[in-house]
Image (tube, rainbow, N blue to C red; front, side):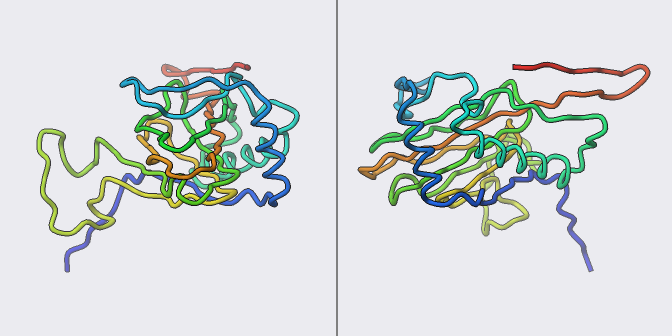
Length: 216
């Protein structure tokens, strides 16, 4: 009997932070109080509004959500992926908030200058964007020179993944992974808090030793 081994996966972490409705409404109230600027992608398409603070999660008003996000990141990187805590430590490099109004979309992009990224959704109104859509441009089973027609898409050959959005959801993924959310058709805004992490510590040894350390 033939065997197929699905190797080299791209792990995407999802969970609920466990914040109640009142706590999440307080987060939204705070987000509304900070400075915003209109955002556009490289093609001039509206992608909503962005906060202007470099590390929004360092705000005292967001200390609880920042701590819960960091705990999830540690579980993803150190417990699930097995990255050694003795040599490598996680550091949040930046965080911000985006607000999508009717017609706004989060167009396809990835996150540069970071290793792991994620996003937290305090509230997802109905019709404000149903899925966080992930796609890889470089699947391990084919080259980029050919685009095949597929009879049946399954876990063994698909190059995309849709994560359904809901209140209090956190999603964490490798920063290189392309992702997007479709246009909102809701009268209510959809808020999210994206964040990026890097890894400090010691890497390798002898002829390939590297030490990385830094702070915001």
